[in-house]
Image (cartoon, rainbow, N blue to C red; front, side):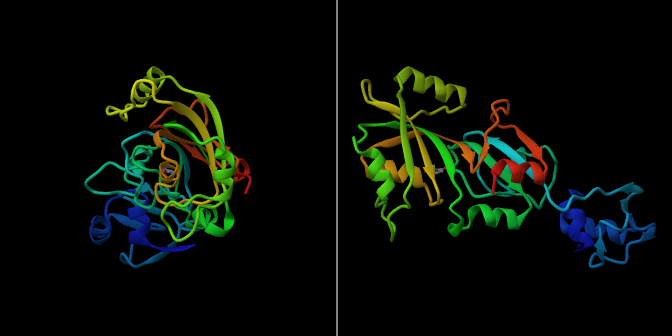
Amino acid sequence: MLIRLDKLLADAGYGTRSQVRGYIKKKCVTVDGQPAQGPEQKVDITSVSVEVNGQPVFYETESYYILNKPSGILSASRDGREKTVVDLIPEPKRRDLFPVGRLDRDTVGLLLITNDGRLSNRLLAPGKHVEKTYRAIVAGELPENLTEIFAEGIDIGDDALTASSGVNVLEAVEREEYLTCCTENGISAPAEVEEGEALHRVEVVLTEGRYHEIKRMFEALGCRVVFLERTAMAGLTLPADLARGQARKMTKEELIKNLGI
Ligand code: URA
């Protein structure tokens, strides 16, 4: 794969494009032992050796991480002003990574981070119907025919009803348990839950991804999602030993095998 030298060095974490152009100009960068010709020089990293100040540049064409997203972090690439999910990846200064889809700022759990646009499209394309599984704590009275309502699709104010989705009420949750869950997840401002108000842990399986979709689905039924975690994407489940805020590198083969796509 041919790639511009300045892009390669910026993606590999050597600085911004203008910073790496400076290194190239100062002859700090060599390609197969020769000073680089310029930032626009195209190199095939699989067949040449690029060095910066005599140190080899390691550049992976594709990288994959599974992140256990904590609450309060923006699902975006680098933001400049705010910490993002990409900042939680333990490789400093990677500029080519992005999250596969978005979770709301207060949603926690499984998020893939990659630089592989094709895989991302494959997982997110509307026609692919890749399942995403969530665990929510929902406040308010749930309708008795919740399963049918979710299966039929819900009017959340968009042009079309939501796609048919799965829902399973797992258990009732005590208010104290909800507050403990917030503390454990570093949520400093839990939702207002009235004493005696019904709380349930619910599992939802979506095959599409609209803005605030689960929150809006329950809102349309007169309820409130007060905690939301993504636990799986296709066949890939959030590893129990991956703490909130931690990311783990995966190979493409491992990821595809786990996803089962
Ligand atoms: N649905 C939501 O409402 N929020 C998310 O973050 C994901 C799905």
